[in-house]
Length: 130
Length: 397
Image (tube, rainbow over all chains, first blue to last red; front, side):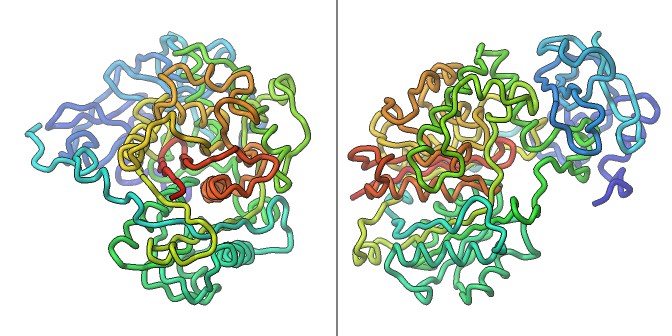
């Protein structure tokens, strides 16, 4: 699937949220699990049709790596940080560091979401130190 | 949630003896390795298969089960069967990354036990180095990958770097400890004439080799080579008729936990925690009985996490476990005795070579790198981004 086939039917509300400045995730109607990335079935209990919710966009860095050997399309941006962030609502997602020294961000740091254009021009969630 | 009606079979006693000695490995071989510009992905598989059949003392016409994995061509299971002129009555194209061949070994045991086939060939080949047909820093953006694609994480190395960052932060693991594994593995490679990198290497050379993605340096990462491998798996009845000593499958377990690193349940615990326990239970052996251990080393951190998940040491102790040459020649824990994916070869999906080396060690065919009197070996393959693991315990009669 090429980039121009995104968003897809599972992801459309998520990317629409990014365009509107909202970090959207899902919550299971049956077991209340926070679900990310969006999908048609709860990966915890198997209930279908999870509900959409909006995250406050606050969380903590769970893991981080500073990329020095970047894929060709991003070579001029290296070094840059890639994060896994645990959002306070109970889900984890990958994100980039929107600003600041990539060497300074550390596991455990509090971060908040912001939206920036990703490499394909679509607004995507990034994070800044909170 | 309501109570579950069905108890997973891997949690029941019924599973624990099911594949013990259901099959034996009768022959193994590599193709040419390293840079092989004058071969296709099919050439290398034919080379490896011919070698493995000769090693087993069997013929191509004996093969009735075919186990294939790869991301080349359109339908690899059909293409290689056609090329080799095999019409298998049992086929398995399980593709779960570099560990696929350890999955195949368990699946072959089950198929042989069920009399669905009696001589199974596991084949693999890759020309990724010479033909550039697999780009390691490729970023996908479809399906689940769309939520990671914007951030430029080089895959798979960046995913392993994230897991390493977490282990460093939780347990104080250091780059020096990971470097020591790379050095020990290189020491084994220096004793393997087929290894791609055989020159001496120091801890400082690893630490000075440059960042790929922190905390992983260039020499924390596996090689990028061409190569193929094959193994012939047979029923117990056939095994007993062959010239070379059969290497028995004593236990196997497998597990898959995620596809993308952001979905990994715990970045410091791999699916080997599940598959390893099952393999040990099935084999009826303990960790301290093993003579030689072959663990997938796509990256140094892969080995550390797998060792912990398999229970060779406690969570957080993997760094100390690997440090100071403990896993090298003459060390107390012989590990990755062919020089591993780090220094011997790594043609994309390395798992077949773990099996090949374990069989040779158990048969006493390893010359300068031979572990004395090895009778029990463990092979543990990891695929994807710490996503899949199959662990096999192998032994002589």
